[in-house]
Amino acid sequence: MLSSAKNSPISPPDLEARRQVLGSAVQFDIVSDHSSMLEMLPELDIIIIAATLNNTTRGLVNVEFCKNVKDGAIVVNIARGQIVENESILSSLENGKIGFFASDVGCTIHASEQGLFSQSEPFPPTDPLAQHPNTLFTPHNGGIADVSYHNMAKIVAKTLLEVRSKKIPSVAVNGPFSGFDS
Image (cartoon, rainbow, N blue to C red; front, top):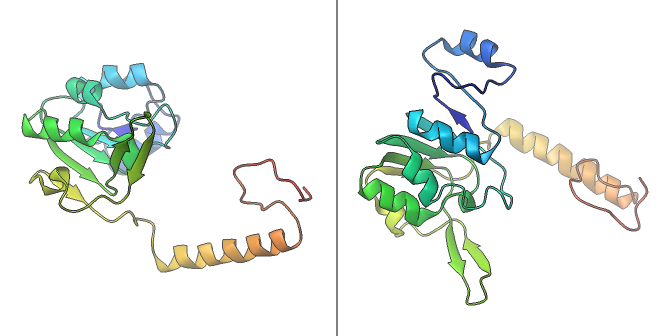
């Protein structure tokens, strides 16, 4: 999470370098655990969620999160849709607790009778959260540019050659793999 905290005890190693580039008006802190995040929320004017989706972060922006934010705070999600519980954000927008919500992804969570969840991403533009006047949704394609397409093509070609040669792809993030040489 990156934020506009002014007096946080949590400082990333490169905080001073960021301040030199951006000036002292903007300060960033990185929060790595849930309790630190909840403690900081009442002090923050702007909260930017940049987290991977896992069991800890799924539903991170929920009723408890919204209850702890500073009145009128701006919340921006540049992570995954499942990190945000839409109902909590919508309720907080309607009662003024959150002043504005922006996201580059929208997600609707569907619960089954067995307690299993599925998602619809992106969610329909008719969703009440998307219709709220204090929200902004952009397509989940912030990294799309000529250079990124070129790099993706190189990665795909290299990976295809590795798989064809029965080698574990150099970009693999999971495993183990059977039938491949390391």
